[in-house]
Length: 317
Ligand SMILES: [Mn+2]
Image (cartoon, rainbow, N blue to C red; front, top):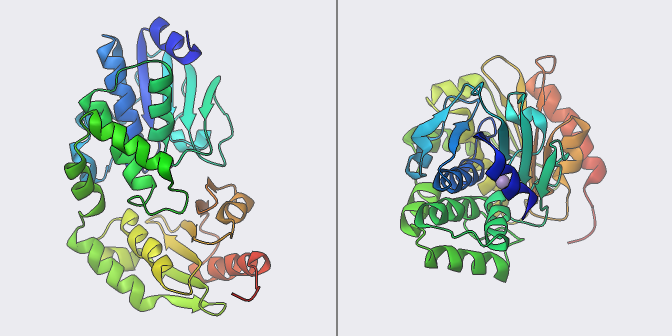
């Protein structure tokens, strides 16, 4: 029997963990694992340190069961889509299994199922279910599809290939509610988020021959639009649609004046390499890291742009 299946069989109380500030992939993969464990008539809990979960995910099965306190009686924890231990937001006292696809994953658990070639953690989980002849029911299929959809940027990410569509096809055949997923994940925005996007594009600067789009967002920018921190993502991703832009940089101020920096790349530029200088994580095409309040937004921007300048290939396009 597979080692992970074995651990699940032998555990009494299992906790699935979504990472802090969870995205669709982390929520969906935890949901699919939760459904699987529930079917085994096992006691299962769902932990996520962040309180403010994106409303777009409200259709994901069992999401109402997420708790921000870690149950004391748990004897097995399974983290989903967490690249490193800090992303858990809690140090589990029990045995830990790590299921993920991040390039920067540090294999921090006792048992690690990390496939860096997978487009989403839900794809890793799909393969795990298949290999262990676990039936994917309608709830699981919906969750797995939602993560695949979001992490593949609606099947437009450059690493999307026939395999991605083959997985999607199988999930649809298993009953995935694709219309709900497509609408909720890809086409559901708030007015505040759209206002922030407008503000961000108005203030965006272009550097290095317009190959780098730069966004600086203060906490006042966010509050003036009544937006959420995560609403900065849209403009960041969309700036890569501009013809010459290969890299997008966001320096965002948190409410406590610390900074969160995100880098996106649609060329061979390695975002993760920069993020790792600052103990961050992610993938080549999308990575992030935090900075303390010792830097102003402007100083952080200059520092990161200097690093990007060293790495960007100034070959003729
Ligand atoms: Mn992911």
